[in-house]
Image (cartoon, rainbow, N blue to C red; front, side, top):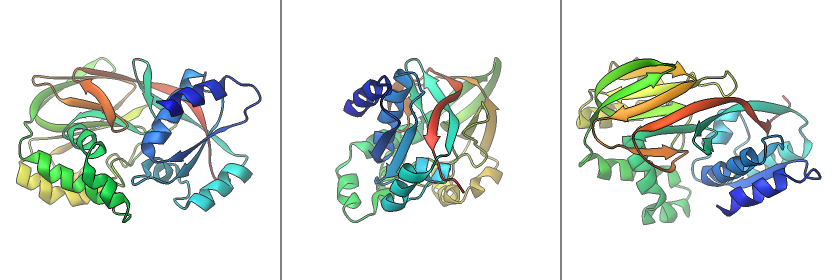
Length: 261
């Protein structure tokens, strides 16, 4: 929360030209929220040094910290991107509900993530938690209302609402998500057995899961997720209560320093 407070205060200072987040996607999330709180006019720079770095991957930013620093210091190009909002909180990359939220929240508080990060194996933490949580997870009947139109799905495992293609440390969950088109891409996975989910899961890293019959996509600006069972909800992998979850896209809400080429 300190990153959010600092970023908000700096965003309100006319002498600050940009605020740079150094860390993982969690640090980025808090910094972006602070800049949004402060009006969204101060540009965001990003130097990735976490285990996931999905924002850098989705925005085409360098994964190497020194190369990312060079972009921050020398690039004059800004890209104005959309944000996904839930009440007074925003996400730059993804939000959602269901199994992915349960896994993300458990991974963030797990001891094995910290241990694996020391060996640059942070991505494995998500996979280990997923296998552990899958045993007890109960699918739900879900109604997703997108721009006023209701869509009903049975035995849903997860719903991801994405502004960028990547989530969860390199998973290309919504390959067609674009950060500045004014709409969010919504991935719904349902009617899939747990054993089959484990078999299909590796495909998400290349984005080839999109052709599986259990995977459906929607797109829109205003999204409400309701379920007959309470599902964990997340904003950028951070806890956001349980369903129902209401989200809307805030177009062109934040400037990001990006490569000039």
